[in-house]
Structure formats: structure tokens, C-alpha cells
Length: 342
Image (cartoon, rainbow, N blue to C red; front, top):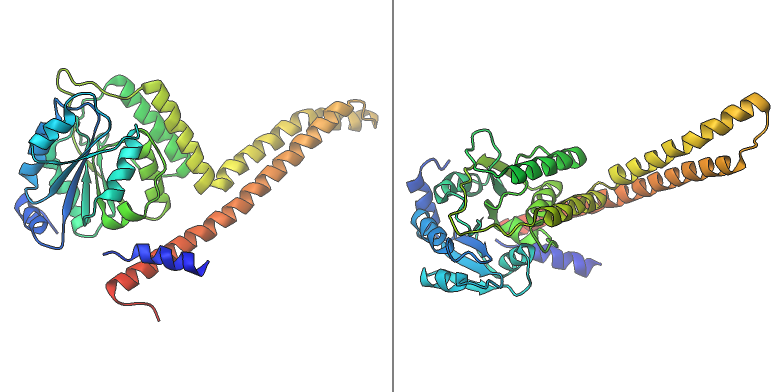
């Protein structure tokens, strides 16, 4: 066990800007290295423009395009513009993000979709909190009141529904959970465990970062429409159901008392429905003639109490692991800074 903890700690040990020019000077100085990560699937119409726009804003950053089995000339167009091209054979944006975080080493990471709907000029204000060490992750919020985003009605409704569900379950004060425009520091990229395979990856990134105590900031960005001939890869019903399933899975893992407690209370409440009938009959006649109803009531109440107790036990275990994770991250930062605890 101690060997596992030492290995975990070893993995942890790695190592106010107001104007565009000032941020550019920071990006040019070592050791601050900025990597621009662009996941792509059939984006030959836009990927070249995205690369050129971000190179103009951050000329000293390295640009990486991760092609996810595109059937068009996405990889060729990216290579022509001087980007470093990687290929991820496992189909799905989640696999691409996992591969990007595993393969690329930098101090700060800029992740942006290759569809040309996000403004490269916004990267400077998004970078500022991470460069000044005020945030671990900055999310470009398309749903902020200050944003001027061109959302399709179906996309806007879906985003609002997922936000309402997440706020209800996790009590998270977030505006845009599905944004593909994000800035990360090295710690969150290398140490946040990601398991999603598809478009639900942004949901996992947001919820896990918040639940594991990382500093997350949202800043408004504008979302423009795709150019003519470019098409979204999102399957609204299929991907929506996967995102809902992921939210409940993460709630089970990070909020077990909430999930199992709610299920337990529901079972207890259902048990009272036949139970009240049996109790009223017993008070009136002194007899219990509805034996099946009595058995059902007792079974539901006992089952509810057992489920609630399971939630309480899992909650205790989850809290202890969260404390251990925070302590190990703290130890990692101390060793990285050269000031190990006494």
C-alpha cells in the first residue's frame, strides 16, 4: 500500500495579465510552455483557419491536432498549416482527450474544437487566471449573459437541461458544462482521471474537477455558427442519454449518500402506502387480514433502510478517499516546491 502511495505522490511531483502583449511575453518565456490542443473529426473546412487564428494570437505556443479517424483531409490540412498531427484510432472525443492529456507535456493547455465556432481572440482573457495561478481550469462559457452565442434551439435546450440536473445533484454553480473551449494547468491535465469515450467528456471534466477540489472559473465567450458545408457530429438523443447516464454515474461515485439516500427514502415512502392501510385496519378491528400488504410494506421499508445505510457507508468511504487524495496532492506540491513537510 505504501508503495502505491509513493507512486501516486511521485506522479504529483511535476512541475495580473491585462493586455494581449503582456500575455504574449509570458508565453514566450521559459519555462511557461503553452500547448494548443485541437481534437478533430472531419473538420477539413475549418481546421486550417483555427490553426492560423490561434498561431496569430499565441505565436510561441505549440499547436497539436488530434485526428479521430477522419474520412476527409483534416490531417493533411492541419499538417499543411504546420501543426503537429497525432492520430487517435479509438473513435470518440473522450478517447481523443485522454490521448491528448497523456501524450502532450506542457505547462498550460488550451483545448479548443476544430470546427471554427470559437474565437481565438478570447484565448488571452481565458489564459489570464491560469497564468496568474488563480485557477486550475478556465471554461469558456457560451451561456453567460455577456456572451453572444449562436445556439440552435435543440442545443440550447439540452444544455439547460443538463445544467439543471447537475446543479440539482451536485449543487454546482456552473453556467456551461459542455463547452469545448477550456484552459488547463499541468496538474489537472496529468492527475484528473478521465474514463469517458464520447462527447460526455466535457461533463466528466467539469464534475470531476469540481468534486476533486480544483479551482474552476467560467468566463464568457461567443459561439458562432459553423461555416457552410461543416456539420455537427453530435447525435442529440444518443449523446444526451449518455450524458444523463454519466451524471448519475458520477453522482453514485461522488455523492453516494444523496443517491442511495434518495432511493432509500423513496422505498420507505412506497412502503407506507400499503402499510397505512394495514395499520388502520388493525386499529379498527384488532386483526391483520391483508397479510400480503403487510409483508410488502415491511419489505419496502426494510429495503429502503438498508439502501440508505449502504449510502451512508459509501459516503464515509468516499470522504476518506477524498481526504487522502487532497493530502497526497498537498504532499506532491510540497515536494515539487522543494519544501517537504516535517
